[in-house]
Length: 382
Image (cartoon, rainbow, N blue to C red; front, side, top):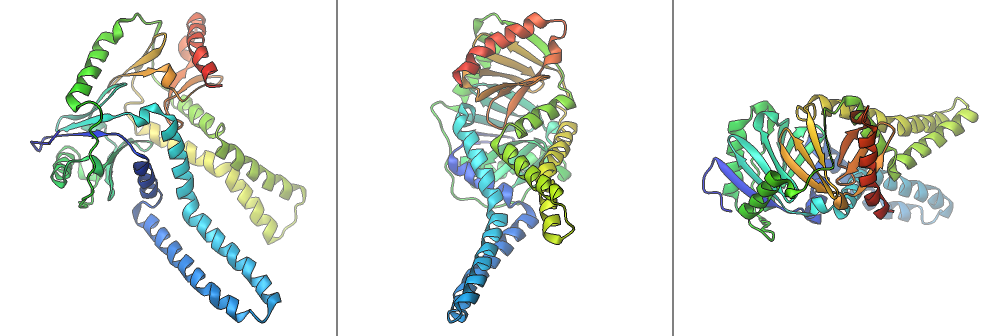
């Protein structure tokens, strides 16, 4: 797997919990703003903790003052900790949960970068993408982040490379194949390499995938349908994800509670207005952000706007998409969900395939057949 020439780089990636933790940290404190927030928060906490013994000493003779000041002081420390570290904790716990539940995230992926395109091989399939389809590439100290859209990213841990020379070779490919406006490379040096070799070598894994793609496992499909995903269907999928997760439900209920309580007992004073604003933020901020991100993600993702073909078998399904062919066993799905307009097949807790029901207009028997195939796998998850 050594990279012998600058125009081709091959690596294996098998994600580890350590990668998840480091990526959550890099994502939460990305950019100059994130680093300033982290530095300011840490310095403030250090100052507060160092000052605490002095405050206790000054108030030791006045217990009443100490009992008044100490809870407020500790509350301020708690609030600073929440602002500083709660986003990191939430992101890590969500990502960790997704990783632990998904067999796909725990399997090996093989990436091959060349000047013409880059390919991703896995047990589920192969994707081949052109460089003009890449939205942007960003580099952190421990990762390359390859974005196909603002919402779709391939995380490439630097530990998976064999050497710094191999990292430099990949940087050269990035610089030669993409315009500068799409690149945010930092030229960081890396030392702690820990490549993933897996149970099979790169060539063997890719050979198996190629054979699977060509042969369709020798089985006749139950259903075949093709469609182009519409923006409104993507929005339905994202809002379904938001309001079926505990965090989305709890946050919304807390926000509604603050709003209702303050509307019923409305008075124009600062504390009540503050709680009213907090309630409004909790109820409306996440859906507004989700709406903006979904729109931006759809508009900047040329692949999602192209036709896609689903081939449904009894135990798995294949997707013939613009970048290649992939397969997924129903038994490996994290969850299967259904709304009035779409069917959602969750590959991870955060990644899903969307099947619009409009595809089956005039073909109700096909929709019933698909539901029948999915029903036995939905029962297994209860």
